[in-house]
Amino acid sequence: MDKTVRLNEAFYSFTQASKSLETYYARLSEKVQYLTGELEKKNAQLNDVISKLRESKDFLHAVLQSIGEAMIVLDQDERITMINRAAEELFCLNLADARGTMFKDLKYALEESSSGTVLTVKGRRYDVIRSRSTVFDSTGSVRGHVILIKDITKLKELERQDERNSRLIAMGEMAAKIVHEIRSPLCSIELFSTMLSNDLEGTPHAEMSKGISTGIQSLNNILTNMLLFARNQKPSFRDVKLRNVIEESIKMLTPLIEIRGVSIAGELKDEIINGDAELSKQVFMNIILNAIQSMPDGGKLEVVMEKGDEFITVAVRDEGEGINPENIEKIFDPFFSTKDRGTGLGLTIAHKIMQCHNGFIKAFKNDYKGSTFCLYFPKNNNNSSVSSVGAGLKPAPANRAIKEGFVSGVTNENNTCG
Image (cartoon, rainbow, N blue to C red; front, side, top):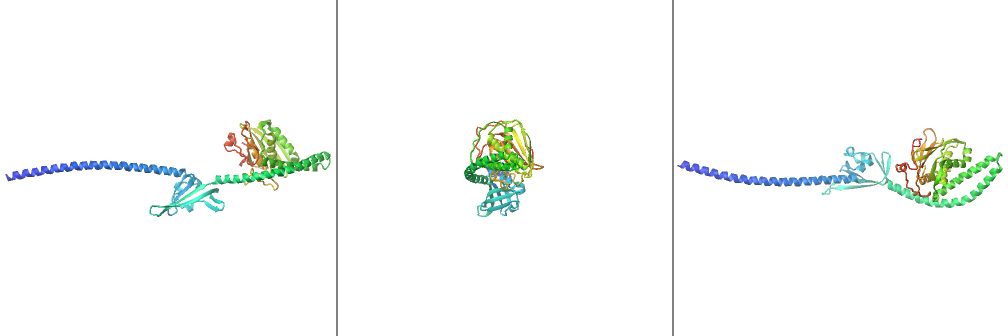
């Protein structure tokens, strides 16, 4: 009997314990389910934060890469940790090669003077503004440095051009006044020279009179260039036979051509352009005169005309000393001359007149001997918005070739006009 009672009590205790375990298990399951839900919420929130951080990082990276200034980030030891696209282009490197490199070991030179800072990288010079900032963390410790370099080369060039234009305008006004004072007595000298030449025709002194005429013509050409440079000459456009313009230009320079012992050969065609005959004549006189002066001991001068799809091209080839590679980018600049007595205005005026005709000039150093100047006149020229010829001229080229980069003064080490 006692055993039965104790067994029942044991079963009862077991049953109660089982019920308690079931209750605890149910509560535990609810707790686990609740914690699982909370964990999923936290994971979702964490993933959202990570996604936003990744988006922010990508956006910040895109911003840094889009900045026009070159940015270089250094660590505490002056080693490169990050550079943007502008820095890659400026220093001619990429992040993979630059990361971990000491900044001082990059191949560059920095010169600072009163006129500004100049950065030289692989032979190329840039006017720059350079700044350096230190990066601190929340505790005030140094984490690294940020270097910003802004390329202001174009801005500096615009400033130099503006200063040059201001000086040229002032000089042009003075030159115009001087030219007017010289022109009057020069006309009288030219008149008497012509009369003297007629009287000495057929005598041993005829060559002396030709020399006087040549000198007067040269001086008159210089004065004409100075006036064209100093004054705004409004072109008068009409249909012009280019062959006649070239022949008249050569005829006016005949005395100088004969004295220098220069022979002229050419191939001219009866092509028509829309332009100013007198200004076009001045272009050819300046180009041909430049070629003659480059051959002090005589030589051959070729004038060849060709017709292309867009342009009528006239090539003037000489057998002179050729253009020095160091000067080939400067020959169209005002007052630049390699001659002891040159004014440096002849090619400048030719350059400006060609711009007014929506044309351009290309200068070459011949492979064999001498130089070639190619003048490009557009076949179908629209001159409704053409500027005047004068100091400070800044016309807007209208044809496709000019927009693609073939502007007056562009040079090449080739002797083919194309």
